[in-house]
Image (cartoon, rainbow, N blue to C red; front, side, top):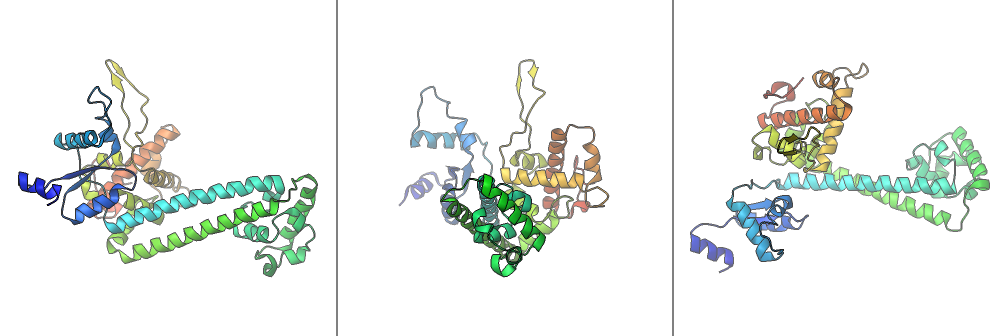
Length: 366
């Protein structure tokens, strides 16, 4: 009989397991014990760390850590764990991986731009997007200006040679830039190898990102629950398909939130507070203790909901929120709109109704 069975027999009640969130390592334990029928609560390290100095002595052992977690459970400050169902967890992991790949692609594009600034000055004037498909196709065949200057404009503009599809005028501009670069650019034996290796990594990252996006679409198409909630979230002005998917996957089970303020705090949109004696700080920043991914999506959605009310995009924004921003500084206005969008998201998912059909106190639908 294992320790858990012995505890259940001794106390006549199935024990509750409390584990600390440690990157991704706790997920295996969470899933294993949940499937075994135990109630499992995952604790944020910020909460468990708050009891670190409950004793004067500096102690850090497994026994002490377990005692702290037990104390947190006994004082009843822990909520049910925010670990979503398998489909939403998969969607969350896919989108987080997509964020990482997008970041890496940007890094390697910047690296390629920095290399070309030294090896091929003036190249960015011909190709505004150095990491674009046409630019990559040219660099794959002509990685240095020295290999390019001998080429004929008509041949360069032929898609069959370089894989690029641009006209003769652009080919002439590229050759002219290469001719001038041969006089001032850095000419080193390893330039071609560096450019080609950077392009190879960039292409691999783009291919991986494309596969992830395909897997995301397949996962969404298989899950009716996800499709229904994505459709509801997209009824909110400013929220598109990707924003809706990221927001839904990061929220998980909306029933774990009883009030819109709880969801805003989970997003990290709740203001911090500083007060001591008669001092009350008037410059309080956002806590930012929630998911950075969902805050990025809310920032984009807030921008779209306010600025898409222009004449060329009629009817797509929220004029009520746009009006509310006029009397506030830009950053304050952005935080206000993000908080209002969080309230609307809560009402839409709670009521399972489109944004124009839900009602919530202190929530502006527009």
